[in-house]
Length: 314
Image 1: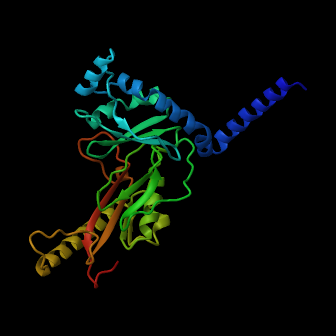
Image 2 (image 1 turned 180 degrees about the vertical axis):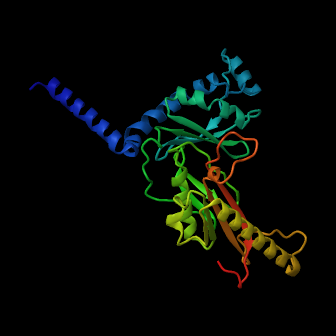
Image 3 (image 1 turned 60 degrees about the vertical axis):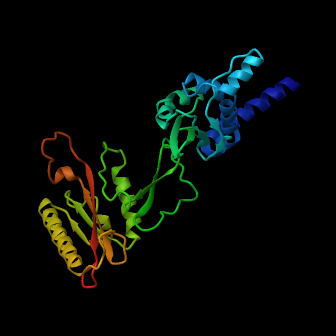
């Protein structure tokens, strides 16, 4: 067999191995093949791409004067960047915006940057004044979800990492920052899976869980042993909400009569004398209809900070 045939056979075997690697372990394929190619493309075309997307600024007076001395024209200046750093789903660069630029300029050009660098997506996020994080995604991480080996810590009470985002990072749900939530989506969009993950995470924390599922508990019945109360009909849901409101008003009234807090004090739901109650409402549309609305609400979340007293039940 001639050397040319051997070389062709080895090339075909290498291509087949890369195709199998890309299908079986896309992260390994990205680190070995995808990242070097995309990083070189970004570095080689960075200035031209930024100029074509309108993300450059005129050169300074010193640069223009220096260019005139050598008989050249000063080129526009792109944002200063760091070297590309690989991630499990793409690469990350830090950009320093020039004077007069705003994050909105980069948000508007994200799709053009994606096409210019042949990436699946480009996400821009401000990190601090004057600095941006450009995250380039190499492939659709949600088409074939690969669970990361390490799951980040939730960050404390009422903070839970629940799902992977389309930029390859974890979505962390923090009830202390945003205590209320409304979950909407079409059929098979992942609402029930999201709720199950949320309930499983909250079940490990010292919080009161109350469920409302007006489809006779078909969604929340598996969590009944952990729930303090579960309403599975509209009448029971109304009665449960009335009881929760009465209890909350009574405890707030008790705090108002016995509190020694100052005028600048803030009541929080995660303090030492408060216990948080999470109310999960499933299939709101089967319970009631919102007035003056023709669309259906398929899920809603209510959260309330409820003061805790030793005589009250959990």
